[in-house]
Length: 537
Ligand SMILES: *[C@@H]1O[C@H](CO)[C@@H](O)[C@H](O)[C@H]1NC(C)=O
Ligand SMILES: *[C@@H]1O[C@H](CO)[C@@H](O)[C@H](O)[C@H]1NC(C)=O
Image (cartoon, rainbow, N blue to C red; front, top):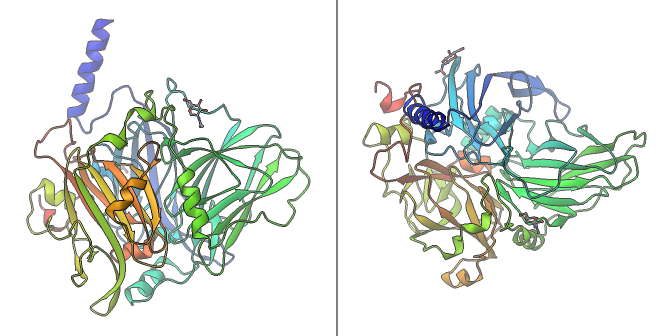
């Protein structure tokens, strides 16, 4: 027995020094994804979309915590391409994050293989193209991470799982949207909403009396949605990797880039019911429907659709505050979520990030603390690894909003590994924002209207705030989060409103210590693509 354990440890260590650090016991899942253009008519008119293995949306990844995921992405588009794994933490390996700050893009008609582990994660996630405006025409899909067999989940068994990717959709292709943005125009309202790539025809069938788990993600690029099911309530159980208090909701807001998991029990009469998603804070409101069908039903769903809030910001903020962490439940690990007392940790640094819509050289851009991010041709992560000067500087962006004139730039915050940091998102625009951080989740401790001040800290939830990777900031309002930066690497902090991110509303957090050790960060993968100033290195 002892010998076996010794061998396993030895194997584990050897493995860490081989291509990438993975536990020899954890299973591998291999995927080959051929990315092509195709034609679909999600809103009734044929248009060009991005397919993965001929599928729109792309194929789901169904996996278990700690699985090793190997995805060979074959780019048959006519443009450089990358996929990012939204909410997948890529522990110690921002090399696999798939954004232009960490990876060279996969050139057209070539391929690259992602290799990563779903380390210590559980929950509902997604992937999508991070390059250009590609995700506006597809290439996205679900990543569902289930618990290991030795881990309990804090809710009863369910009869089945449904995955719903809901998002806004434009009939104009990615190139037309890009051209419009580059010419200085904001995007119009999307043309509609889709559920799993379909406008009004997604059907989910279950048995009367049984409970189903709904994994719901807002894959859209611009609008918040409200989700509801006619005649049924939703019991929220998980939010982006955290087990939530199991509150009951008639409808729930999901902002771009966010995921929730809810249980739905089929208690009604045997018939069909409408599943409804409608946009929030838009004029007009866009709505789409799907169908929850009870097995044996011969009765179509009946109008009216269940009503929902439309413009009401206050309703949404109030609901957001009810989404809280279940302190006694475990997540991917057996220890309760409440054992990490985030409210008692000393904050070593505060970033107040103000977003703005500006004109730079007469052109529409978006800024964070005055800097409108521009991707350098050399990924930041490669510049770090090869010590290439002149790619980025840590002094370009300030910790607080400034009054200096807006400028284009490569903004990177220099942070120390294990820093405990407060980030206040100060929305100075009259539109809703959605902010996402790669590599770590954050505790959402407060939402409020107007301008944030230190006096508002006394209103923070320092006990059971939800920990998630994407958070909304209401129009002309603020949201405060606390984050423990325990994942060394180069991490993108970005707007999920994709037009804004495309025009500069993003930045990077460089989480760093000078010790070079495989315990804190893996080496550059042997297959890493080279580009820019790293091309011959
Ligand atoms: C490209 O795909 C081939 C298999 O088709 C594979 O052997 C090779 O490792 C891939 N290249 C990269 C850089 O991942
Ligand atoms: C919290 O999690 C525990 C499991 O540890 C579960 O029994 C309980 O019902 C959950 N409470 C709420 C309010 O969700």
